[in-house]
Structure formats: structure tokens, C-alpha cells
Length: 291
Length: 295
Image 1 (cartoon, rainbow over the protein chains, first blue to last red):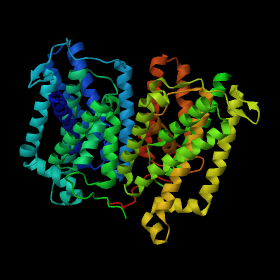
Image 2: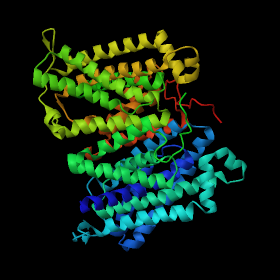
Image 3: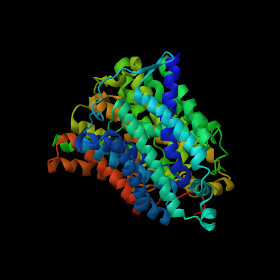
Image 4: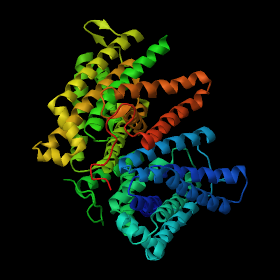
């Protein structure tokens, strides 16, 4: 039982990290930026490249990888999405373009690094720590701490600062934000950059926990997307609750039915919410009202 | 020669898949990433019936169409409540759930091990066993699909579908029962896609869930988009381009281990390029613009 709770906590924090990284971009840019999955994966492989090939120290590699993908995310916005925004591409078109880019990037990773599972550093199998009769590995504990830290940072630092408010303003009403003098493009770039930075963390944590494969990003992103939709657009607390709900359902289903059903359970939950409570747990009703 | 015939059969299968998705996404504007689920259900129903009940080809196809159509209705119903890009996510969910069932219900579907040994179809006493035989069969189904699609598109039903795509509120104001059209088009599209699945099952004589994943769905929608959404022959162009182009890579001498990756890079790249510069694809009329007024 305690192990189940520990697993739920870890799973919820993993999902939360991905979800919040996606949410920053999604609420500001208002489309499903699927390339995010590639950002997650690229960060992990950069970590691998820095530590194993260039022999840089672990902490430095991790942070550097996160910074690089933050820049990559920012570039993606400026080079691909901004021209499309100028043209008036609909969210659907942007979604499809981001999906195409994900496919290209994921396959490039496969070509350059191969499809086998890679590890960062020389992770020898170390016994986990026991806390209150549950076992967790070091990295899992790090993830839980990171989750809590990111949540606190977001709620107390980001959301209340000028930058955070600009992000919210653009998320709420881009036109009005522009009119009130907010530098829209700059805010967009920051959204993509910081979202990608956090995504990088998620990818690296996962790689440190169980290793990396070129396709690892998509399932992670999908769980994040589910949590964001469940949580209600843009609300940090909603994402937290949703992550916990999702993790609980998944872990319990995994325990009772077998872990291979976890994905299906997550998506069933998503469908249920999309149909019966599209605004999510804490959200206001979605802007796109059906006729 | 066999290789060439094989490519043609594949093109045939993808023509059927993309024409059926074109009805849903191109003509009605309901972008869905669930199509591989219908494809898969068609394949699995036919395979299971052929293997466990030894029932004839025609019965299997009819059952596949019916069951797939039912799944289509199931997917179509959420489209009534969820819009555009959120619906894409919902269709994604259906696709993943279907794949999960196919992959995990090992006792019934064989799970990841798949279903081997699907017998060759016997139609009116003729056994189809050669590449040529399958090609003829697939060509017949392609032509049927083309004819059927054309009848739908040029009919009043088809016109309402296009109206729903362009301006749903107007369609409702004109008194059209939009819900019925949306669900029906999903049923029809799903049924048609299942035919491709049945063909695939018999042709390869072995199926497993990996042929019916999200990536397959994305491939099919890419064909529709690149070929041209909302045009009658667009899917044909798309299928030819996206099946043939990557096969040409074989002749450049790429090692087979990364050929599959390059195939995906190619169609992923084409998808991005078209979305940026020509969302309506080669021949299409629909560019996935939002139904709301543009800012």
C-alpha cells in the first residue's frame, strides 16, 4: 500500500512536470504543440551526448542540455510558428505542422543514435532508499522534489511576477494584451523557451530513471496533455490535482489489471472529461463553445 | 515484378483508407487520427472470423464493415460535442484505446504475437493466391470506393457535408440535422476503411497490432492532407506520392535499418512543408481554416 502511494506520488510528479511544461506553451500559444515531445527526447539525448561522448560532468550536462532545448523551443517559435501565425494558420494547421516536425525530429534521433535504450552516465544498479516501508530510487526522489519545487515556483514566483502576468494576459486575450502594450512576440518566445526548459528536465529525469529511447517523448507528452486538459486550461492547481488523479487511476489500474492497461485508462479518463466536463476539474468553460 | 505488384497493392490499400478518411476530414472537416483503428478492426474481424469460424470472404467483409461502422459511430458521437483540435485529441484517445485492446487482450486477439496463417480468400470459387490476383481484387475495391465516394460527394448528402465543413451554423440554420450527418459520415468512412483492413489481412496473411498504431493514423491523415483534402482524386495522388516516394529510397542504397526512419522523415517533412505553405495539399479545396471568423 505504501509502495502504491509512493508510486502514485512519483508518477504524479513526473506527469506534473511534463504537464506544466506543456501548459505554459499551450495556454499562451493556444494550440497543441506536439513537437514538445521531441524537445523532451532531444534533451535526454543531449544529456547522453554531453556525458558519454564529450565526457562533461553530470550536473553541468543536465543543465546545459536544458538550456539548449530551451533555446531550441524558442527558435521553433520564431522560425516556424511565428510566420504561420502571421499567415493566420488555424490551431489545427499548427497542430499538424507540429506533429510533422515531431515525426522528423524523432526519426532523426533514431537515425543518429539508434533505437536501443541508452543510459546517462554509467548507471550501476543501486539499491533504492526506503522511506516508510516504500522503496524509491534516488532519481525518483529528485523528481518528487522537483515537482514540488516547480509547483511552488510557478505559483509563488512566476504567476505573480510581471512576466507571469504577461503570460497570463496573452493566454487570456492576445489582442487585448497587445493593445495594453505587452510585447506579444517576446512573451511567446519566453513561453516556448521556459516550457521547453522544463520539458528538458522531464526528459532528463526520465532518462536518468529508466533510460531513453527515441520515442520516449510522445507517451510522456500525451500524459501531460491529458493532465492539462483534465486540469482545466491554464490553472496550475488544476494541473496538480489532475496529475494526482491521473497517476492514481493509472497506478491502481496497473496494479489491478496489469501495467499494459495504464495507457488505455488514461485515455478513457480523458474521453470522459472531454465529453462530460470539458472545462476540466478547475477550469472555466472552454472558449470554443459548440453551437 | 513481384515487388512492383506489391507496391501497387499497397497503393490500393492506402487509396481506400485515404478516400474514406477524406470523406470525414476533407469533406466534413472532422480531422480524426482514429482511422487506423477502423483499419485495424476490419483486419482483425476478418482474420478472427477466417481463422476461428472459417467463414467465407464475403461474410467476413460484411461483418468487418458493420463492426467498424459501429466503432465509427462511437467515434463520431464525441465530434458532436468537441471541436477541432480538441476533437483531434479525442480521436487520438480512441486510436490508443483500440490499439491497447488489440495489443493487450492476448487471449482473443493474440496480442503482440498477432494472428498468423490467415487463409487465402475464395470468392465465387476462385482462390486468390498470387500477387496479380490480389491486385485485381484490390483494384476492384478501389474502383468501388471511388465510385461510391463520388456518388456521395455529388449528392445532396455530400453537399451538406461540405456545408458543415464551411459553416456549421449556417447548415443548422438551413434546417439540416447536423448530428446525423456527422455520425453517418463517420460510420461510412469507418466501414470503407475496414475493407482496406480486410484486404490487408488476407494479403499479408498475418496481422499484428503494430500495423494499426497512432503513427499509421497519422500517415493516413498525411496522405489525405498532402494529396488534397476535400478533393475527389486528392487521396489517390497522396497515396501514390507517399507510398512510392519512400520506396525510391531503396534504390539509393540506404541501409534497411534506417530506411524506415527516412520514410517517416519524408512524410513528416512533407506534412510540415504543406502545412506551412499549402495546407490544402496538391489538389484539395479545404485548408483546415478555423470555422470561426479570422482575426
